[in-house]
Amino acid sequence: MTSMEKIQSIKGMKDLLPQDTWMWQRVEDAYRRVMALYNYREIRIPALEKTALFARSIGEETDIVRKEMYTFVDQGGDDLSLRPEGTAGVVRAYIQHSLSIQEPVSKLYYIGPMFRRERPQKGRYRQFYQAGSEIFGAPEPLADIELVIMLRDFFTQLGMQDVTYACNHLGTPESRKAYTQRLIEFFRKDADRLCEDCRRRLETNPLRILDCKQEGCREIIARSPSIESGRPESSSRDFDRFVEGLTDAGVNVRVEPRLVRGLDYYTGIIFEGVTAGPEEGEDSLAIVGGGRYDDLVGQLGGPVTAAVGYAIGLERVIDLCAGRLGPEKVPDVFVVFMGGEAEKVSMRLLHDLRGRGWSCDFDPRAGSLKSQMKRADKCASRFVLVLGEEEVRSGKIKLRDLRSGEQADVSMDDLQKIVGEKLDRVQ
Ligand code: HAM
Image (cartoon, rainbow, N blue to C red; front, side, top):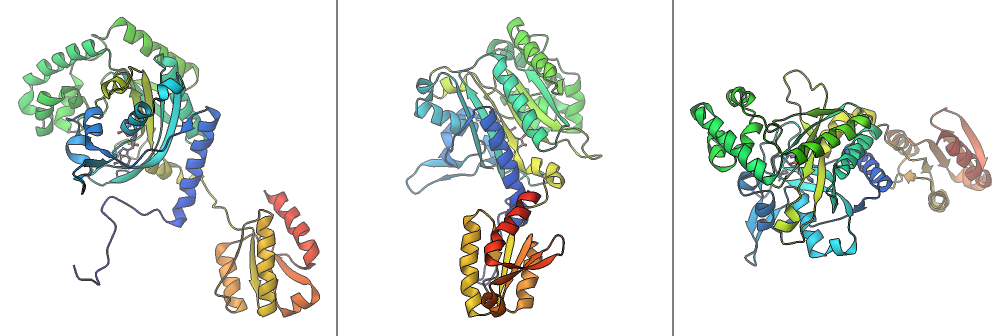
């Protein structure tokens, strides 16, 4: 590469530019509001962790750990990976800081970037953002129900009423083992018709075959044994309670006995939220996925603690609700000035107005009246104030209401009152 060649961002990792970040802020604010309503507290964890954490939680044989992690050995010889998801780090922090001793039930949430080296395509990125929530210390399905109701409330705030939650229950470790054995026997009979990945999964992680999207495999999967038949009574009871609780709350649930998830730590109820009606020929993308992982805290060296959570894919959510989030907030006031004295007065005025909580802008290039007005138009502020030498001398400022087109000369003393009243009225 020559030194003049422009360096571009990494494939699958995108910049979020100001014309979009206001939508992100709105969605994240909505998430924080819902979290406050349900009394979940924020946890912030590092983007980088020891690779072993992900291998031991998500699973050595998962696609994520096998081929999608950004892993490297740092200068000190530590094997590190950028987090491909948030749960493993939250569990590590939960154990490391003995949160279970501080409170029997912890309700936590996080928002942040995750990294997976997947094949980039619509809705699939190599750096993407998740908003996730986890409950520790609550083994009853009431916790699972609360999470999905919370999701429903969040999506409703964004005008997304059409999310359906596909769900399943993976049974107990024993029943899952027996089910896996039945799957192995079933798929072995058709092994030569399975795709290469599934033939490997047959040896390493047979449950994951159920998630294969290849046409040939899907036909075979459709005939495969269902998890329900071998599931113990207690699991089915919990699952029924979950489905009933959500149905009672008016949530769209769909039982999917062949639903599996791409991470190995799940132990019981699992769910995925999809929006209804993707465009023809388009795969429906999950906007959220989650479930119970009652063994993970213990497996990572903590006290045995029931846990359940989910993570929302924020790019997908923003894609879906972008048209409903607007308009972007514009400045209340734009100040235009001509001349040295007017500049001084303007700077004081901007300071005063901002002190009152109004968002104000001006053009620091201090060019011609025309170019400043152009800039004011471009940022579409509600009001424009114009100060020239004449205005400074007379103590009257030109106030233009860009919405109504009205213009008036107002005294400095009246300005704050008049603009304040108008802003209050429009807010
Ligand atoms: P996950 O299903 O791997 O679960 O990811 C959750 C959501 O993140 C997906 O439904 C999708 O919306 C989004 N997502 C995943 N990969 C990408 C990508 N490459 N580009 C854009 N969006 C993506 C988890 O991550 C678990 N930690 C969820 C969880 C929390 N389970 C229990 N607690």
